[in-house]
Image (cartoon, rainbow, N blue to C red; front, side, top):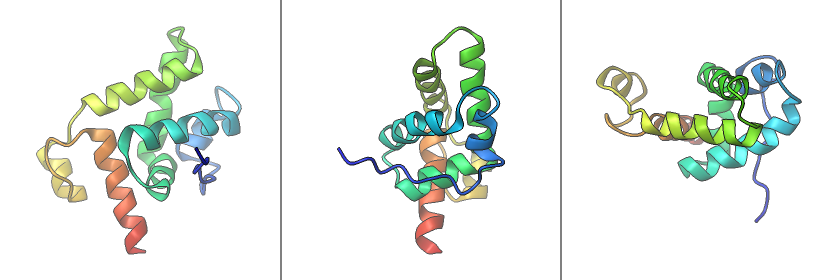
Length: 120
């Protein structure tokens, strides 16, 4: 499989900037990017833009919480993906980002950012 990970466009904030506080940001990015891409079936641009967003910062916080709880990095990323895929888009968020209510949260945001990237 070809590595379709795109580099971050937001080294200071988002997932990349936040992950630098608990690990080597490049190493974490190389693990999280393909994991989120596979889980959401989004586009590489959508995954990058999600991870670079404020939502990506919150996702990094969730990964960090997993590490703090004793999980290794890969397990912490998988736990965060599972948690975010278990949450669903509510009516208010559906209205904000024009994604269907009930869609898994992580998938909805990656799809939103994928569509935004295609429109740009």
